[in-house]
Length: 578
Image (cartoon, rainbow, N blue to C red; front, side, top):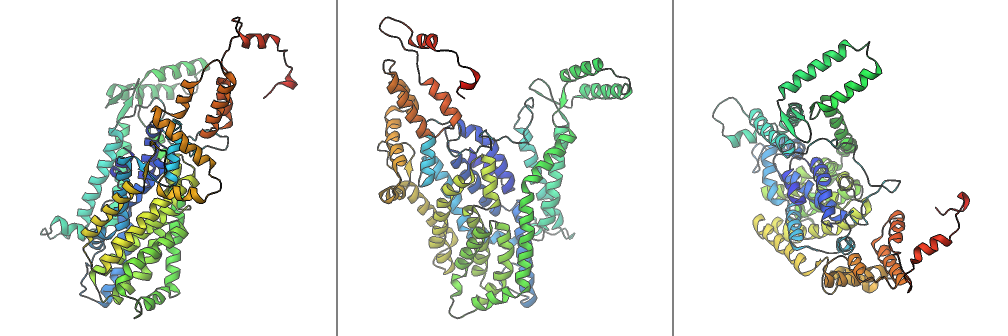
C-alpha cells in the first residue's frame, strides 16, 4: 500500500514523501513493519517516479536546464539530429534512466516476496520477531524520549475522507494538462495535442497549475462542514446560522458578560463547523512551505555554484577532457551517471547536481560524440538518474532527511538500511544499462529487461525472509558474521528467529506462554532477557519488569506478595526509590 501510495502521488517527491510516510505509518506499525522499511519504500519511490513522470514538479526544472543547453547547441548547429525542445528531449531520456527504472522494479519484488538483505533484514527481524508495533528500534523519538508529533495534522474531530486527498490531486493533473496545451498553442488551429505538448512552457504550466490546485483545494474544503463525525456539503442552514451568530457577536462585542461568553462557546460546539477555515488553510500552507524551505536555500546556492563554475571556465575544461582521443565517447553516459552520483552524494541535493552538471557536460558531450542522438540522450539521462542515485545514498540529502522525518525513523538507521539497495541498483544500472546501451549492444528495452532479471536474481538468491526455519541471514550478512567481533546480538536474534518460526508468533508471546507460576525467578530473568533483545526504553523496561513478578502462593495458600507488603515498613520521602 505504501508503494502504491508513492506511485499515485507522482507529481512531487516532497509531497510524495510527506503524505505517504505520515499516512502509512500507523498501518505499517500495526503490521509490524520496521520504520526503516517504511522510510526506504517512501524515499526510494518518491524521487524516481517524480523524475520520470512527464507531469511533476521535477519536469519544469529539468526542462529548463535541458532547454538552456539546447539553445547553445542550436546556436552552433541549426539542424541537429536531436530533438530541439526541452520537453521532447525529456521524454526521450525516460527510457535511458536505468537507475530509476530498476529501483521501481526492485521495490515491488522485495515487498511481494517478503525478503530483504543486509541491515534492512536485521531491522525487519528486530521488529517482526519480537512483535513490535511501535516501528521497532529505528523509530525516532524526541529529546524527551517521546513519540514525535506533527504540527500539521487535522484536529481530532475532523472526519478523514478519501475525496479530500483525491480531488486536489485530480485537479492538479487537469490544470497542468490544460496549461501545457494552452502555453503550447501557437494559435494556428492546426496543431495536434502532441505538438502543443512539445511547444509548451512546462515551467509556467507547473507553477500556475500548482497554485490553482492549492486554491481549488481551499475552496473545496470551505464548502464542507463537519458535524458529529460526518461531512455536510453546501450547508446553507449552517451558513445562515453562522452569519447570524457572527452578527450577534459583533453587536454584543462591547457589552458581553463572562457568562454570555461561556454560553456562546457551548452553543458554538453544537453547530456544524467548516472543515478547514481560511486561517487554518493558510497556516497549513505555511507549515508545508516550512518543510521545503531548507531545500530551496540549497537549490539557490547550487544555482550559484553552477554559474560560478561556468564563469571560471570549468565547462571548457570538461569539454577538453571529453573531446580527448583517449576517451571513448560511447562511455559518456556511464561517466555522466557516475560523476552525477558522486556529486549528489557529496552535496546531498539532486537538483543542485543537475544544475552543476548540465552546463559542464551536455554541450561538450554533444560535440565529442559528433551529435550522436543516442549518446546525447544517454548523457542527459545519466545526469538525471545519477543525481537521484547519489541522493538516495547521501546522509545529508534533503529527501533522505524528509523521508526519515515523515516516517519518524532515525536518520542514520534510514541511511544505513537504504544505501545498500541504492548502491546495488546503481551497480546494475552501469553493468547492464549505461555501458551496453552506450555502445549500442542492445536497445533500452532489452536493458530494462536485463535489469528486471538482475533485480529478480538478487531477491530470490541473495535476500532472505525475515522469519525462516533456520534463522539464516542473507549471504552478505553471513559473510559479515564470519569476520565480525561483536556479533552476539545478531546470533541471539538468529536463534529467536527460529523460535518465532516454530511457534508462529512473536518471541515474547511464545515465552509468556511457556512461563509457569511456580518458577518466579526464572520468569523474571527470561522476560528481562527478551526485553533487552527488543531494545525498549528505560520507561518501558521498568513497566515490563513489574509485570514479570506474578502473585505467588506458598504451600499453605498464603499470598506471599501480601505478606511481603505487610512486613514492609513505610518509607519516608527521602528513601523512596524513583
